[in-house]
Each structure stands twice: as C-alpha cells, then as structure tokens.
Image (cartoon, rainbow, N blue to C red):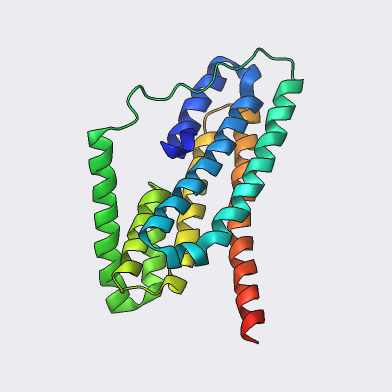
Length: 220
C-alpha cells in the first residue's frame, strides 16, 4: 500500500533498510514492486473519477503492467522467503500520511503541468503535451494523470491523445526509480527492483499496443 503514498519514497526507504540488513534484499524488492501496483491503482482511481473516458482508454496500460508487477512481486517474495533470512520488519511509512507541504507541492506540480500542457498543445499540438507529461513523470505519475485528465475534461485534449503521454509519464517515473535503486550500492536489491520496473514499463507499452490493435481490428 505504500505506493499510494509515494513509490519513489518506497524505493528510498527500502534501500535504506537493505543497506542495514542486506539479507532482506529480495523481500524489500518485492515491497517496491508491490508499491508499483498500488501506484498504478491510484492512477486508475484518479482517472476514473476525473475522466471516465480517459480511464476507459488508459485501462490496458494500467491493468496489464499491474498484473506483471504483481506476479513479479510474488516471485521476489518467494525467493526472499527461501533465503532463510529473518522475518522482515516491514516498511516504516511516515506517521502522518497527509502533509500540507506535500499537498501544496503536488497541487503546484499539477497546476504547472496543466498550464504548460495547455499552452504547448495550442501552439505545437499534442506532441508537446507528451513532453510536458513525461517531465511531470520525473516527479510524480499522479500529477501527470491529474493534469492530463483535467485537460481532457476541459476539452483541450482528446482522451485518445492523452493515453500516450500518460504512458510516457509512467515510464519516466519508473526510470527515476531504477536509477535510485541502482545507485544505492545494494546490488541484489537494485537489479531486482530494476528488472521489475523494466518489465512494468514494457508492459505499459504492450498494453498500449494491445489496445491500439484491438481498436484497429474493430474499425476494420
């Protein structure tokens, strides 16, 4: 469930845990992988409430990678359980889930992405929205999802043109987490996390391709 707070923060917290107790590398990596499932579920909930039409089109790029991440997380958890290590203590989340500063930062990011995306969309077309959403993904997938859904609701961006920017934001955010995991010095943990995130990002684009193929077949 830590993915509902911050998947990036989960990577950092689990990395610190593994640095103290290397034997927990695989259970910690499983925790990071499961947080990706929570993050994708959160994105889906946001889209469902803000823009049901975008949620319908984006469902494959959320459901398929969620399934991949869940199965990979189970695999890591089983590997960790066979390692014979001590029972993991679990991730220590912040005592206060809600933070005024965090909420303001999130709102600022969303507002910035909405304004920049709207301006770029008017001047350069939907390709520019792809760039701005991807940049938002450096910080938060949630902020990109809210911004894109808001543009769709406002009629400034067709729902069909918002799916690829969302996929790009998810992929970029996965890249950020891969870098954080690999630079921590915990080799087993880093590569286990990186593999899961690469599989998840690949599944995002596989989901997009699958949905596009279905639409083409239905239109034929």
